Structure formats: C-alpha cells, structure tokens
Image (cartoon, rainbow, N blue to C red; front, side, top):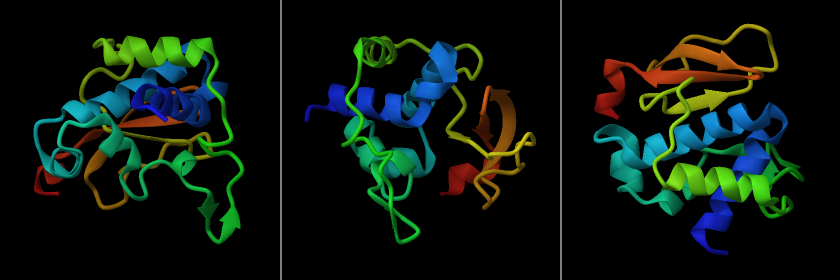
Length: 146
C-alpha cells in the first residue's frame, strides 16, 4: 500500500472515535515526528512518513499482536473512508491542528480521566493538553538526548 493510504489507515485506526478534531490532532503529531529537527524521530524517521509510522513500538494500530494477544484493531483491518484520506492529505499539505500545534510528539489514551505526566514514562515528554480521550505531550529537554 502507498504511504498516503497507510497514513489514512493509521488516522482511522488510532483516532476515528475522536471526531474530526481528534483525528487532525493525531495526524499533526505524526507529521510533527516527520518534521522534528532533533532527537529519536529525526534519527530513526529521517523525515520520512513511512519510516515514522513503521517505527517499532510506536503505534498500537500498527501491531497485529499486543501482549501476546491478537490485535484485531490494526491498520490492515481498517479500510480508510474519504474523511481519513481528507485528513491525511490536509496533514501532508502542512495542516496542523492548533490544539496541539507543532511541538507535540506523543499522544495516548489513558483509559482514565487523568493524563499521566510525564509520558513517555522515560521523562522525555510532558503533558500539554487533552482532546477527547487522547492526552497530548510535548518534548522535554531530555528528548533532545534520545
């Protein structure tokens, strides 16, 4: 599958239930990883969207097995609809969701009303905002050393 379709599938799988704004916020984070000028995502993704999406252990929707169990909610089982392509194209053309801006590098659903801080748990991100069920995180100074 081409990279555009892969991105649309990821948006659907990771954030379909979060509405238009939530899907745009997730797409913004993915593209922020593509464009970040330092740290792990520059080193591993090298500015390539496909490499960012396929990086090991980054997106649960990219996995078919999680914790030894089959993950049926994955990008191969989720066919994108026009809205997912629209949001992917918007992000690919430079769109950013103002609710997370150009700094957020992580998001997660804590399945809890409280967003954990820090996240990831290695201290490279701090809580920035919550959009529906997802918590969004900006990098700390420690991220530059990853």
